[in-house]
Image (cartoon, rainbow, N blue to C red):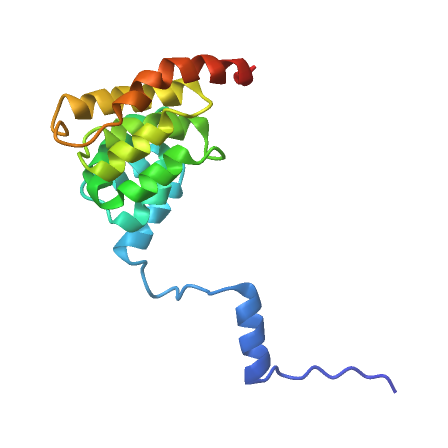
Length: 178
């Protein structure tokens, strides 16, 4: 007694095992171009990242390119790549800017991307950024607003009172930064 007999797994067990292990790429199938670019952007290899950032990017890649704003060696290329996508993904960029849990390096660099997007939505988001706890984020938002106001966004609505009140709120916020 007690002999163990191995049985072959049936189709239901195969499906359960595959679901638990996650999808397995078919070794004979190459990644689609967006997935391949995403892999290059996530690789950490400067050469692969530079190559992946060249040319127009699919908006699906916005989140990963945003993360590259925190990599000092790639931040200029990431800003340039995001500027090309910014009119289509301004909501996602504003979400990153205004998310206090987002990496500080990312948040302070997003306004440089948005300064070329002359829409009311961007102006309103940058105005919200003027209330940020971090001085550099507030400064960059103010810089981007000035760029828009005196550039191609002059016809947009700016809350003059809010902008003028910012130095007072800076003093108030500064006391809480320590």
